[in-house]
Length: 506
Ligand code: BG6
Image (cartoon, rainbow, N blue to C red; front, side, top):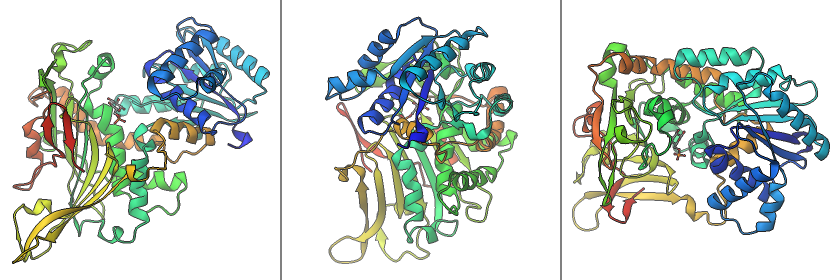
């Protein structure tokens, strides 16, 4: 990495789970693959009192837990790049400590004043910390760049997101702010752009004339785990749809950008978000379904219902499942339904987008399955990352009977290539000043604006049900009602439910 990128990486919330599970393992891998700048240090800060060495030991332990460590000496060398300073962000002067620590580390390591500040804290501190950083004069770019990475959720709804952004803009400029959406860091998500725009064969068909509908699923088999406090005030719509899934829809629906410049790509995605057809608050039930998982027995084990989980209100109406139908009002997509669903405690973990093509105008052959199993392009984001095209082929023998067959590519076939995890890619991009894979403020506002009627109706209208679904199933059956066409259903990618797990075909 270029010397202009020498910097200190400051993590607020350094004793938290995200730091241990994702951020420092990602930076450790950048170190292993020689992608860190020559002069570099991490300064962690949080409320707990710890010395540099205590922090290093905690992180060494975490990296051993989450990564395959082959060379302990290298890990020990890496840990020497880590420093720690306690700070209580409830006290105005607390960041003076941090400032002093940064100056000390800079002096000792000969690092200039470039700095990345990563907010890995509860969202309520997204308002507070950037202001404290600027009160301490640490956001000034007079002698080097200053970048601020903010985790999702960026706001709780349209109003709070606007307020948060206005607050940030008092002391920071948009160029300095990196709003992280880790889905954009996934290799397979970026591959949507390459699949669409490097192949002449897809783009001519990529519109309302040939595409019947688009379906995006992000299923998780885990429940809320230890995140009840956050999740109960969030829910699936805010946690997954507003950001990850609408970003996926944006990449699938966008026009070809003029170049790969961040501005060009972000502005095409923004155009998609601005074209999302508004849902009328009174019609929300026709376009959106919510559900909550109930206790059940999954793979022979009993699992608690959502309301019995730790830190969840026993009367909670928070959705752990959300499904939506929506439209994009522009020339390419007018009238094509987009279906999105996501949920916790579904049968398995799978994220994929399915492009369903229209059937041929006059079908000559005999086919056992319905038209919906005709041509589909499946972009599998995770797991078993890859792409699959389903098409009709003659069943050998007499007559003209058609069966569906698959043409597929799996990332695992590229067995000599390492696919970097999302956080690693996004942290590297921030270090290089590349904002292509970060959501801009206007995109975030546009998605909150689109979801506002659903959020408001789900909050105010008590007659809109929160359907219960047994843990380990594909969510409430009522979600099928969103699919307009008779005889068509969501794609259920995983069929064989066994005690050993689930086989998920691409
Ligand atoms: C996070 C959500 O942004 O994404 C979590 O807050 C969710 O609730 C996670 O589990 C899913 O990410 P991935 O990469 O495992 O699909």
